[in-house]
Length: 186
Image (tube, rainbow, N blue to C red; front, side, top):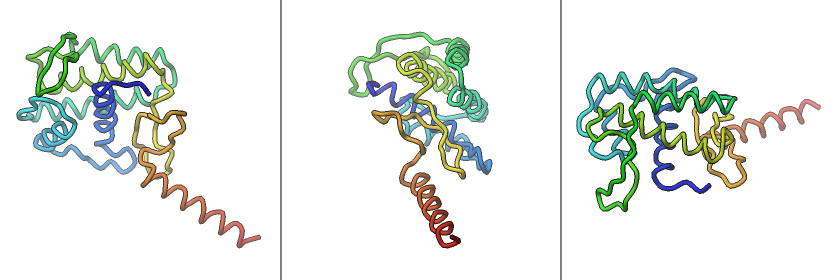
């Protein structure tokens, strides 16, 4: 993978935002505006400030649209979905340097609302991945008990689980136990 720091942060934010609503059990992981602030701060979004109930609603509404990109089976459809997000957010590329970081691109207008900034950020990150790698990097966890999305950054594009240490181990243990049960029945 040849992603720069900003693309990596953007696509990680996109996947993590989708995963704030558990697709299997419906658990809500963005319950209130303060959680939004914490979530975005942990993802290095600069100048988060306060989140409003409108920001919370907008980010929750963004999740299924991002999931649709991760689960798209057609590159043209994924590109259309991302382009719609970019257009709606009013992306305005500009070079900037802040917080001791080197010169880099920001895509949201400086006065953009929080949800608009996040939408622009994740859409541009997803656009970069689609441009460079197509759909091959967007995945849904292969575990039968998880539907989290992730970006496969492995060199050989072989990652199957959102978290190899949790979902991957669970799946491997379950498969091992199933093989043992089958062997005992013979």
